[in-house]
Length: 188
Image 1 (cartoon, rainbow, N blue to C red):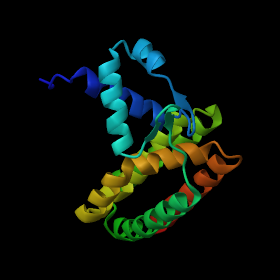
Image 2: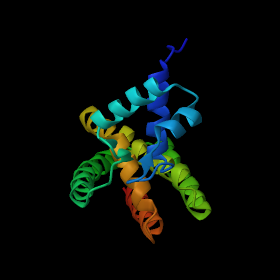
Image 3: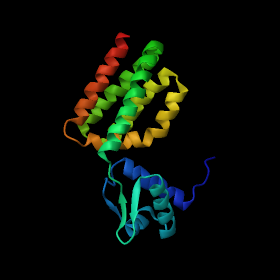
């Protein structure tokens, strides 16, 4: 049986998911009244959820101005991309040496599904599948420490992928990069 979530937890999860899916975009103002109506909870749980999201650096609460989805800073994007690149390249090398035929097939299926979704231009589903593709590589590597670090960064990485996927040509570039990774892994 699943534990019962408090209204504040429900609001937190739904608002965070909407941020990750770019329903609420960076810089967008979040109206407590709208959130209360949309999520069918009181203002107190909304305020608790927003305070928690602020403590996790997803939103900024500005007195007398409101609550805003935080902007993605260029230096943060660069730092996160560098960290992810180092960890993913290493995980890919390890995974290539350990990869089973079944895992390689799963990666190929995930990539093919990604290609189909890219044509549909459905960013939330594309980024979820993109995350799954990379998770398959981490799992195949079998390095728990790398998996733990990347799991801790998962939401930030997913958000960055979603935001950057809206840039012209980025989805095509991502697909090319993943195809290169997969081809290299298939060659061993």
